[in-house]
Amino acid sequence: MTAHEQFDGCEPILSAHLLRTVDDKLIELLRSLTPGEWQMGTHVPGWRVHDVAAHLLDTALRKVSLVRDGFFAEAIDIRTPHDLVDMVNRLNREGVTVYRRLSPAVLTDLMALACDQSAGFHESLDPFARAAHSVSWAGEDVSLNWFDTARELTERWHHQQQIRLATGRPGILTPELYHPVLDCFLRGLPAVYRDVHAPVGTAVLVEIVGACGGRWRLSQGEDGWRFLKEGPPEFAAQIRIPEELAWRVFTKGIDRDEALSQTQCEGDAELAGKVLQLTAVVG
Image (tube, rainbow, N blue to C red; front, side):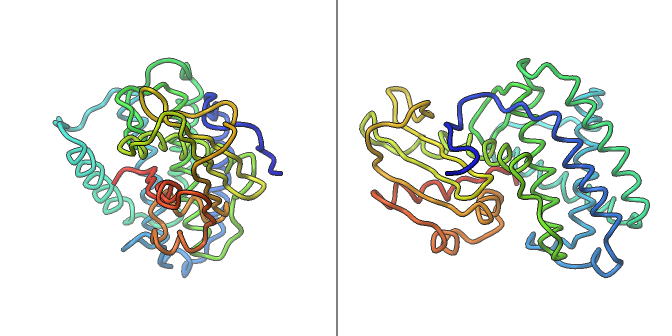
């Protein structure tokens, strides 16, 4: 039994208070890195530790500038999902190009300021009001602030975890921080399954195995796939993913075939394996 054996995937994820915790750990981590560790490669193609840190600084400042302050540096016409991906990739490249020029000391000091302002902004929001930006990878055209804030937590958490993995530092796979990250990631499952046609009542059980994990129950309803509050009598497919693997699966940090070899599936293998197609990042 995990610490989160109860149902997941339906209740709001109220995580604004966790941003300061995860960012405090980030600042502590960055201040501890040696010059050589700043130059280590990560599993993000072409990005060193310095580049990942630059990305975290850029996205925090960009979010506060755009959403809190309403500052638009340029007019962007988004008409298709591909337009969104292209825009995000371009902005990420530009941000890393600029902030990788900063020394580790300067970057870290600016990160502390950016994190404080970012956390304060998310703490000030009504979690049930409409968010400025939808969580597109979950298939939403409109999202509430609680979901956008949880998405922000996943970004801060998984990029920091990339740095920790690259430098051999202890991870932050703690129930307090990692479980809400997993819960947020898996909210994208209905969108992943929307093109899967199955009889109404067909159910899939997703289990993230470990102290930070839990169980998510997805079912085909009359109007699409949705989460269940209670488990059905039986599942057409089940998949178990080790918690140390899960975050890499959902952030493009591991090849899908390699991930499949490290999971356990029961029942309809194709239906269960669909879970591994979930990508909870843009770009």
